[in-house]
Amino acid sequence: MGGAVKGKRMPRAVRERQMMDAAVQTFGQRGYRAASMDEIAGLAGVSKPLVYLYLNSKEELFTACIRREAGALVAAVRAGVEPGAPADRQLWDGLRAFFTHAAEHPDGWAVLHNQARTHGEPFAAEVARMRAEIVSFVTYLIGAAAREADCDSELAEREVGGLAHALVGAAESLAGWGNETPGVTAKETAATLMNFAWAGLENLMNGRRWAPPSPRG
Image (cartoon, rainbow, N blue to C red):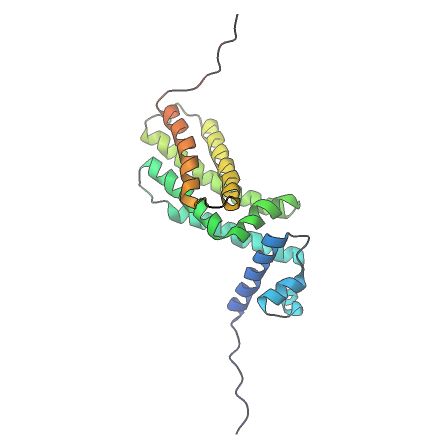
């Protein structure tokens, strides 16, 4: 009756999260090529065969990391925006949520922005899907702002889509800059882009469009 009491086994979900956390940290800091399954297993506190038991290959593990980090970023942006708020407030809240998430999860951002895009398919396609979802959401926000200003008929659907792509591209570039520049906060980064973007959007929605100067005679 004096047998040893076995330790409580770790739930599968907890173990998977530990492995994914370790993988995101390793891929984000060392890069996809340099990262090793041995290093990931050691950081997670599990054996390498166990990592392969959950995910069959390094490629599958990296893909799973991209999907998790992409889903978390999209969810953070959507959760940060209050439906029904004024258009500028919705855009501001979305930008703050975007930059805050990128700043609080630098390894995850590195996986999405630096690693996944530079190693071809299928990784680039995963990031493209995330980007398309964010662009779609920003397109909706810009369209809502246009309707609020009673100028949605003047802003063609193609133009709104182009503005959304430009804004998301700028946000991605600024997030990398903000994470790499000491002392810059997510709020400051969001304000930088908001000042740049909203001033232009506000002029556009008030009918003040920029036009190329006429060629000199």
